[in-house]
Image 1 (cartoon, rainbow, N blue to C red):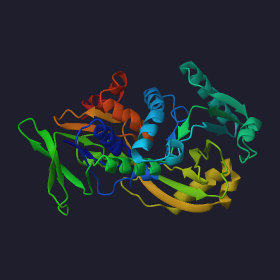
Image 2 (cartoon, helix red, strand yellow):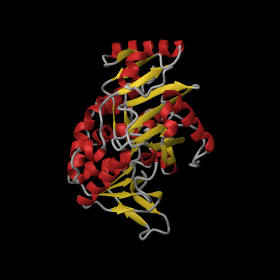
Image 3 (cartoon, rainbow, N blue to C red):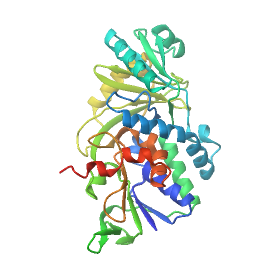
Length: 371
């Protein structure tokens, strides 16, 4: 039997794919779908998220985005939903990255040239063309870069669908906290997990344990994962303000706005090295609204629907850690940082042996020599 430690989008996706393949699996998490996946905006945007130093992450993101339509269609069917667009709010209308000043325009030109060299579709736009696409943009927008292949999805609907699919597949879900790994023999083979003393059973035995506990992974295994706090806000209006994702750099920080089909607008997100602090702060929300207003002035008229802080699992190189841990019986699927939702389909493919070359980019082996 497989035991998956972690009930976020990555852990639930792994359990779902294993169950679909006919393997017995159990998920262990004290509060499934309530962590970073609950807070995430759900951007499937490898092109607009790329930085010059993150070419490997771009490769992973582009490969995973290609898998998302099939992944979403299968998930919607297994969960009994009408379809990916209706059931998961999966949309593929692209991302518009806008610029306000000369330095921003130069940066977009450089990014466009880089994307062109990689063969990725992007389109440079004037300020007028940006406002033609998105009339609610601020008049001060001077130009933009459209990544038409970028997409987005509602992570809360995705995790709800995964939970429904797992229930239909009769996958056990143990709502308990894992406090340690069970080991046997001189080689320290992992043979299960130990649960918190308040759990109904003290331990669960397993043939294979997959650690997908996000920011908490380092508490259970030797993996360089740290929590990166992100505060995010959800606004609501009767009519959508935007038709696609919009992002820009304001006051030195990146801000993005992600529209939902039901009129919700997600504004995010701060990036703070604050340990396991999940408090929503007035300062964080002020910065989000201030920067969002620079992009789309009308956001200040919207109703505040939700505010939340989540903990992204960061790694030293911003790449996820996926594959054998080096300890028999233990597999790692963590460290996805900002890309957990985007990379969920690729992560499951790697663990099922469907990706070879890309698996090497996120192998835990790269950290073996770190003292």
